[in-house]
Every structure is written in structure tokens, then in C-alpha cells.
Image (cartoon, helix red, strand yellow):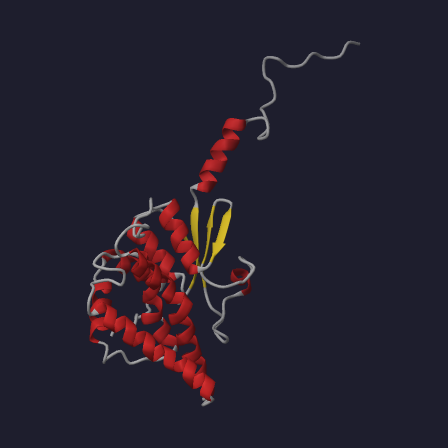
Length: 243
């Protein structure tokens, strides 16, 4: 009995490996999928806000803090090796750290919008405030928060806490001369700086009554439609400390 000839009329469909067009299409679809892994009341607020300012599509996946510890849940901590917020996934890319994510999205999805380029007159100011947010301001706020909870009056802790006073003085002085931190135009430096000026004060109380220019600045930010949309999506029901 002779062996049956291959079916040349209705051949078997090609596998994914044999279909480079479909494979390329799936890869392109994956690369277009920007996901913000959002931990409530965290620095990932910045990422939602940036995407709203840029007007780009994204998927928001919410994670809630442990009601007792107020820490991120295990599935959130497992997203990146360091296990902190914020985190995004963009196709095959999984990225943590606020400043890295902000710069990545502005470059990859926003054509550099809200960044200040080398050669611009205010480039040094932009770099300073963009990195001051998490390099100096947030650590000072964290030390102050911990010190206020444990009641530690150690001289070293007191000296570190005093950095927060200097930070507020510096910011208020700057905003007395410019509309935004890098100059007269809104940039991602403002997105980076807003969290320690607002949400962080929900964890560590701070009276900003004496800081006239900071209070005016926060009202300018609060009037931005993209900011309003972002806060409703990121932390609905949370009253952001703006005064």
C-alpha cells in the first residue's frame, strides 16, 4: 500500500515560528502596551500624572497596601528585584524607580516632551530639581517621618531632620522667582517634586503655611486638567494636601 501524498490543497496552518509576519505583529502589539503598576498613595502617582499630561494610552493596574503594615502586597514587591513603587511594564521592559520611569516614558512615548535638553539656558536648573526630588528631598522627609514616630532626639537624627527645613526654604525661594521649578515652563521636574510636597505630608505632617510661594505653586499645579484626571484615577477619594 502506497503512502498517502501530502495534502497540497489544504496544508496545515503555519506555526507562530513559521509565520514571521504574525510574530512581528504580536511583538509590535506587546511593545505598544504600557502598563502602570500603581500602588495606592505612592510615588507611582507621578507616572499616572505624566501619562495624562502626555495624553498617551496606558493600562492602570491597582495594588492596595496591607491594611496593617501599610506596605506593598507581595505580588507588587515581586515585580522588580528591589520591590518598591513605582513599576511599569512596556512590552518586554519592566522598569522601576520614579526618575528612570519618568525619563523613559517622556523619551519613548512623549518625544521628549516636558524634558529640558542640553544647551537650553535652564538645563542645569532642570537637572538639579529633577534629581533633588528623590536625591535629597524625599530622604529628608523620610528621616523626619521616622524621627517623629520614634521620638528620637539623637543629634545626628536632628541634624538630618533639619535638612527638610532647608529643603522647604530652598524650594520656596526658587518658586518666588519662577512659575515652575525649572523655569517658566512646566517640566517633569515638577512631576518629580510634587509627591514630597503633597502626598508625603499624609505620612509626615508638615505645616506649609509660612511658605507662600509653595502654596501658590501647588494651586497652579492643582488647576492643571491632566493633574486632576490623574489624581482621580490614581487615588480616588484621597484628599491631596495642597495647603
